[in-house]
Length: 150
View 1: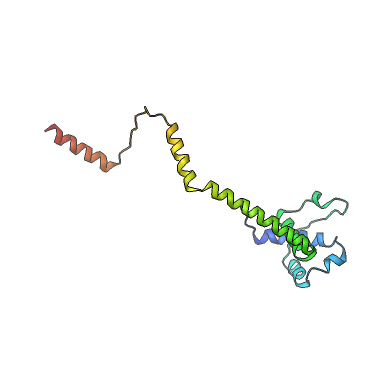
View 2: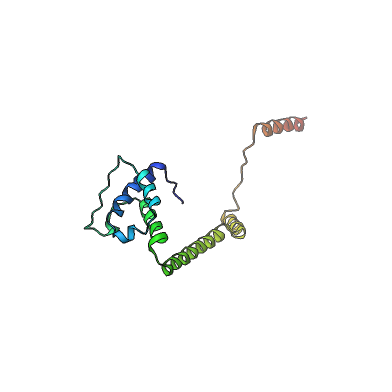
C-alpha cells in the first residue's frame, strides 16, 4: 500500500536530509542544483533536530523512510552514472511488471469465479437454507395464508 506523506513529514525529512548532506563530499553536493538545496532548506522543520553520526554506516542511521526515498532520488538524478541509472530503471520496470502480473492473477475474473465455484462445492448440500424475509414479504405471506384457509 502506498503511503501518503504530509507536509510535516516532508519538513522533517528535509531536516534530516540537510544534516546528511552536510556530511557528504563537497564534489557530490555540488552536483545537486542550488535551487533544490534551497527548497530543502526553506521547507525544513526548524523545530526538529536530527543528528547524523558520521561514525555509523548510513544503514545504521535512524532516518525516516521518506528521507531514504529523497536520498535515493538524489542519487538517481545527480550522482548515479548512466549505466547505474539504466540498471535502476530496468529493475523498476521489472518490479512493476511483476506487480502487475500478481494483480492480474489476483483479480482475473476466471479465477474469481473458479474460487467461488470451489467454495460452493465445499459447502454442505444437506443444510436447510432459511431466508430472512423483509416486512413486506412477511405481510404478503400472512395474506396468502389467510386466503388459503378459506
